[in-house]
Image (cartoon, rainbow, N blue to C red; front, side, top):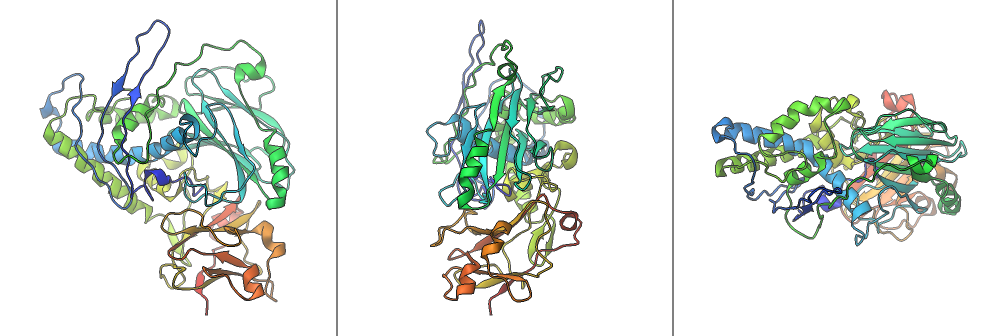
Length: 512
């Protein structure tokens, strides 16, 4: 899930399917009228291609069309498409996990934890490149009324765990866990962007999100199938409560209900800028997001405004066409950037600084979008390091229907980590885990005692579709799809050697 969660629902690589999206937005308070907006949208698919239909005309304050040229409209739409992509992908997860109870991927309502004392399998299809090293716990937090308190138990020092905190921008705004805070017990209050107050007694830290909704993604290391009962016991001690519940004080007024825009992967059309307009109402340009004010003003010129139906201004046919063209160009730029991240070392695409907070990414929205295509909810490099590949040592595409391969780690060349490492196999077409006769989706460092090392202490992994007949090869078999292969190596809590380039992942070679 950490090169993970690049949504299949937004299209395999967000490209081979698109969504039709109609929504009603209603915001209600006591004594206030309700507002309801229903819009139709244009096709939008990113990855293999992007099909954009016609934009609808909007109602709102009139603007002189001469004030906005078609060139400027196209440029703004391009920038908005780049900016919005990861946020739309993130919204898709939010909707499936916390809103749509009919979804097969539904987890729990807001501010409730969903624990999965299991490992990812081919049955998990809402996200791509899921890890199968850790058990997950998920919490989508509504921070509008008051902070949410996450409490973790003391966990044995040998077991890695982390709680990744992700805003609607898809920034990793902080961490709780082995690397960040240690394995001791503690309670942490996650606050929204508008909250201010003193740290209450018994709270280790106030962590402020830049958006009013945020995602807490718990990963708890599993040492193997027999360890799942132990993991379940740990997960049962993770707790989530509002600050008033935790402190046993009077609760503030509830936040107004939200009528979430419907997300339906079976429908063929969607509108990124209506999604974006909806999401931005929960992402105020305050605090470190004040830097976005000029960008928001620019977006408003083509009718993208927080909480308003898109477009919020009338658009001529010429401007609509220009915006369509610009959105297509932006999507293509993100896809091109995805293929040009980092450097290739021994056939592995190796990069750092793809994921992090706003300060780390320095306003590079193109990189943020490309990183989301590589895998939404990727960890900061300090938390996890992700070499990935689709090619062998000679630069040829990996294909399990044509070849067998080996991946050999020298005795002194295993991935350098403070926690653990893994090599996970995916279908190259879908980036999903693949069914195989031994239900093995990865090989990781906790499995080393059960693998067959060579006489010199090195380890050779056998990567192939057909089950090996040789006993040693079978013990070290990483089952491959009967077609294109995609492999992700994960180094959790990597050591300095992995981050400074002193260590490099070994190449994948044809099995001779």
